Length: 192
Length: 192
Image 1 (spheres, each protein chain N blue to C red):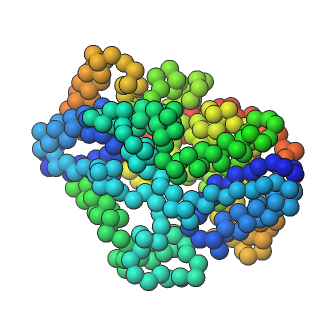
Image 2: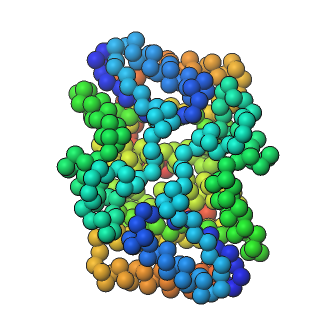
Image 3: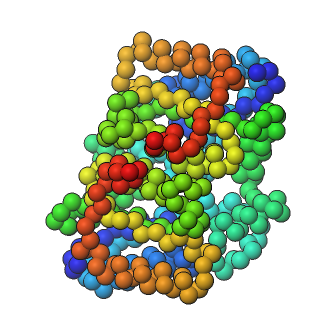
């Protein structure tokens, strides 16, 4: 929908990968809709995933015994978090401010294993079990509404034809994304 | 038990933290039992958590399009993984070779929230939901038997007295660790 700000947090090493194609399609389709799309390309940015003292600029509250949670909270209040963290927070915040409803989030990812390997009772268990910590523990916990995940199963092991179908399905879904209802992000959705 | 090799993978920034104490107690108690204990102190080692091309030494199999899974598998076969990865693999392997049964693993960690916050139906859901990807998806999947997790709930928010009790309980548990039966690492344990 025109005017909406979309942030895509993208984590893959190779732009020419299937994941790269999924990202490109999302940027194209959403831009076409008039959204302003920002991509945080974590690998390209060499985004630092470790939670260390470097996330705090300047003096620590207690330099005798480093407590990450306390120090980053204090730093946050005085604007003393490191630039890379502040930048990402800003992107998240802006995407939030511009849509007049609760923030939406969607996990879009590919798997190594086939769909059957992520069914209840199979080797990996229901794929929803794996989504619980992120969708419910992080997003829902922070008040973010969650759209149904978009999962491409095992693109490495299917035909070129099937891969094209997958990209197509993704592009199709994006066209009507804004009309989707969020999932009911309760334990039943994951474990019923 | 004397002669067993134990690997502790430890991830906390501050040696003087409660987590630091838990680790120290484990090293002391297990060494006292005659085990040879190795600690991988990930923060101190500045262990690289990102999965990048740097994990592969020398030429890539396909330098046009980087595929992490393929490249690290090829590198593994020719002994071309980076040193930090090889070192850790060696530790894991050695710990495995010295005990004449399947490898054991135990997740020992602290939480920010209280025990009630990790009960079924509460804000975070059953803590076992969060253990599924690691205990079942990684350990069980690799054929490793899993001991019941050791969880210290919210050490930051309890009394000094209670914290001492927690450390004590940990030390006590370690004394008879080798007699414990692994959990039945099936979906029922997590989601029944």
